[in-house]
Length: 175
Image 1 (cartoon, one colour):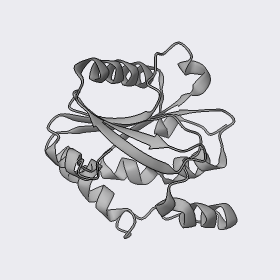
Image 2 (cartoon, one colour):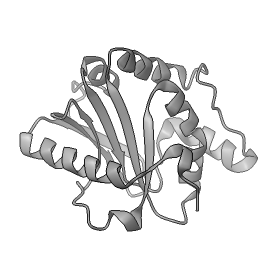
Image 3 (cartoon, helix red, strand yellow):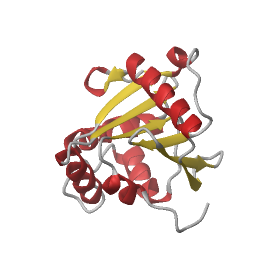
Image 4 (cartoon, helix red, strand yellow):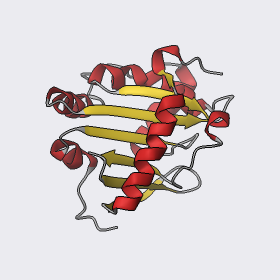
């Protein structure tokens, strides 16, 4: 897990056709979200301004990718009733949509018959995987890049199976 590996932004910039992201945790303890998540829990207020300093880099990155013809999709497998963190993610997903992502949600009970990788991942152009590794409390502990064709096939098939069953964001009701 070298620090010289490309970032998501670099991989997205190099991407030519598709970028898909599969998220399978009910809570992420990502450091840069901690204050925003805590404030949302306390006040119900959330930054959903695509031009805000926290969102603008992502909105620009996805916007540039989709302008080049890249399809950007994100699927989230969630337990129901959902955790507070998933409520928080759901509330902010309007910005992902604004940026050009297509986002779907799959209740975990509907994923039981899907062969899934053990970790979240980004898959770029159906061949390059960026694994995301998280601790038990959801903190990011690292990532790894793989271009193994068999692993890319597993990730492609897993994402496609999740996507076909998942509910579009605008139709998914939090339970």
